Length: 188
Image (cartoon, rainbow, N blue to C red; front, side):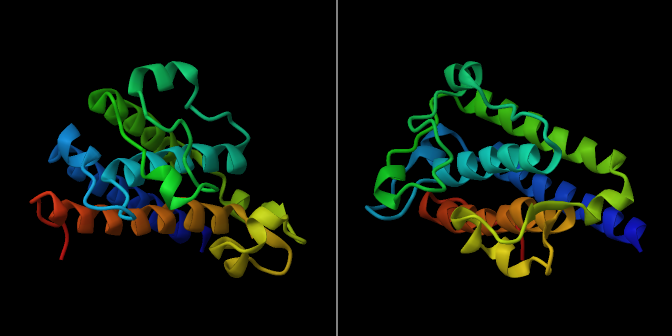
């Protein structure tokens, strides 16, 4: 059963990453930094937030440090050097990407690392507890806390919630926001 789960997870993550690649290849800096109106975050927020959260989630799951560091900040030049998870919408309205090509390189680096990890993961690793109960305050109110079993959040839960489901949520935002800048959706 673990092999079936891992195969499905690999395919779903690669497909979701493919949607991000399709989106980024059909937009430019003006599209991603466009602000439709106050309270509607730019595409730059969803792109950077999700990629940076996948990077951070990878560390929480595997213990391997994130790719993002000061050198990436210098290259990508995001306006708010933060994924924004614990910030307000007003704070994150300022999010812009300065160098779109470098952002796309960062995104590919993060996504490639996740996909490579999924090709080598030991099936028994799926059951390892990443965050045991009782959950800290920052986790207790999350979707992953609701999904978690009695022992806590497993590697499978974390990968499904923090990477896959979170990525699809933000892809939906990106698809909607693309209509604000005259671009179409990518899936039916």
